[in-house]
Amino acid sequence: MKIVSRKTNAMRILDAENIQYAVLNYNSNDGRIDGIAVADKVNRPAAQVYKTLVTIGQNKIYVFVIPVTEELDLKKAAKCANEKKLEMLAVKDLQKWTGYIRGGCSPLGMKKSFPTYLHVSANELDKIIISGGKIGVQIEMQPNDLIKVINGQLVELVK
Image 1 (cartoon, rainbow, N blue to C red):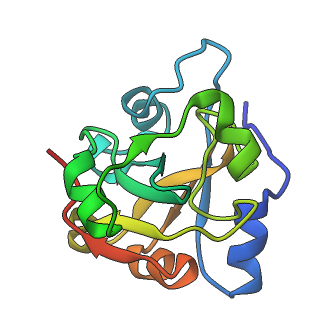
Image 2: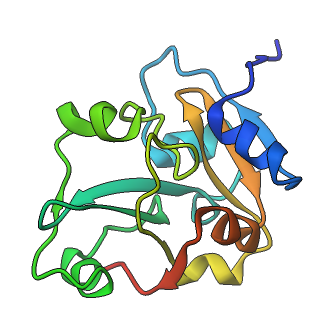
């Protein structure tokens, strides 16, 4: 059975920019929404699937997009953001700041535009997969198109 989803904010932004992408739907009824499980469900290598992490510094929000198999190095991230220290945004605050919930947070279409950084490994891939803006929906697209739309920077971010 094919799962059909309505357009998300992330998709509408890509459409408005005439950027090509593919929607990959997956069944989340089993509660497994971690990145490795999602990669398996959309039948793509885990190295191609990226997660969106939201941090807070000195009263400012920053977004980091890294492979699901990796861990964000908060010291490297803080250096990129010109902050002394960054902390992960509490899950309870995620929707308030971004409009998204855990497991469905996309770097596209947040409530506001935040400084966004993409791990350099994306540059080695033809396509990366990011959240489509809700649980059960992923977007596959070219990394350079994502960088352009989010006004992102490619940086070294993982441990």
